[in-house]
Length: 132
Image 1 (tube, helix red, strand yellow):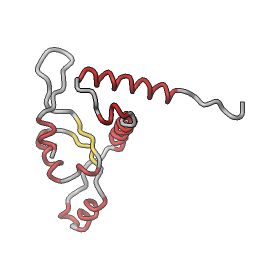
Image 2 (spheres, one colour; image 1 turned 120 degrees about the horizontal axis):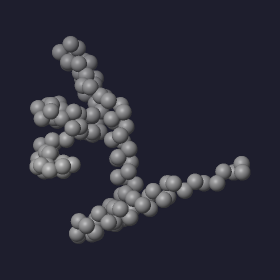
Image 3 (tube, helix red, strand yellow; image 1 turned 90 degrees about the horizontal axis):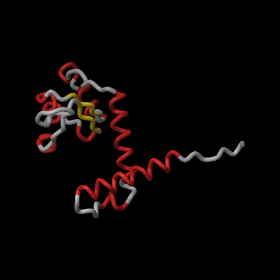
Image 4 (spheres, one colour; image 1 turned 60 degrees about the vertical axis):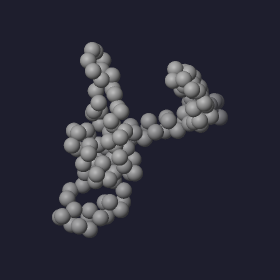
């Protein structure tokens, strides 16, 4: 699953040099927590923050000692994934972002920027308190 996605990944370096093709960490939800995905990430040396579904957890417990130990899970990193996902969901409330009508990349990036500014302005407006 991750092989196709990570194959096209290119992370620019701050200085000169070729772009990196391996991220430091991958954050995902329960849908990506299969043993095959975890093994692929482990082979590539990528830290994974993937929540484990209840059925996988129960299966491992049923197997007892043969089930192995549970995979490492960092709650703070998982909260960061959740924050990023909520941000993307706010972007998708805008039709131009959700449907991507813009054909050119630079125009779509401009649409994202304007949307981010609108979201920021809406979220920073404080409601007047009723006690004042």
